Length: 289
Ligand SMILES: Nc1ncnc2c1ncn2[C@@H]1O[C@H](COP(=O)(O)OP(=O)(O)OP(=O)(O)O)[C@@H](O)[C@H]1O
Ligand SMILES: [Mg+2]
Image (cartoon, rainbow, N blue to C red; front, top):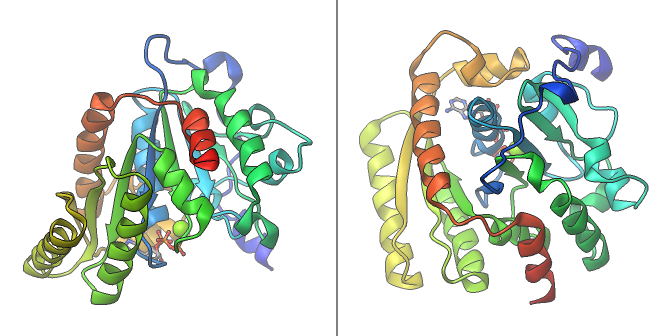
């Protein structure tokens, strides 16, 4: 039943190795989408940002919600290889990525593999080394995180060149976003995360939520958060999920699609300003710190 459901809309891989256009001058920049609370829209945003960034240069979407991965569903593909093979040492990242669209590859997480949700230091080291070996193939990497504050989720965020914190205006989501920021900034004090308020119904509520989080982060963590987008609550997200595609592949140009396109422009500029630290190396440093 599940297989049949997922098969609807599944496409075959459309990119070949020959079509790949690796960045020659720029090293890969990494962008990690986090939230604290589950269900805030990390995967929805990651799917569209990865797709739009891939129009500018080869992009790797890393489904870091390991164990309950579903980023592949939002790209309409069914990977035959997953990160589980990298963690077990039987394959490298280069061998397990799945092409989604021209310029976009997915490093799929493994579904239903509980062990992947809590990797040990040795397994994370293996992953870091394997990721390092593919970085020259990509301009961008988008990390779609798991909810929560697990060691590996925080390490992925701390290793990334940019971190986007996603929350809804709900006080529970704001509280969990703050908790994530606290842990992240303790680990990497110079990190300057960007904020996205998602599922905004009333713009004033979105603004108030942003102000609230910006205020407490400044007062208690000493860091000025920058809110870079308010994304509307839009049924387009549900429809895109059902059709197994990124929202921005809808072509309706509705409010959410427009807001995501504006967000991608902002993010691309911001990423270009970031000093690429090398995700694999940074992850390695996180592990030995
Ligand atoms: N702007 C939006 N408008 C309407 N629905 C949305 C919006 N953003 C996300 N959703 C819906 O919210 C649900 C959760 O979204 P998504 O899976 O992207 O969240 P997540 O943060 O990745 O969750 P998890 O923590 O479980 O990984 C989905 O059903 C998605 O379609
Ligand atoms: Mg998700």
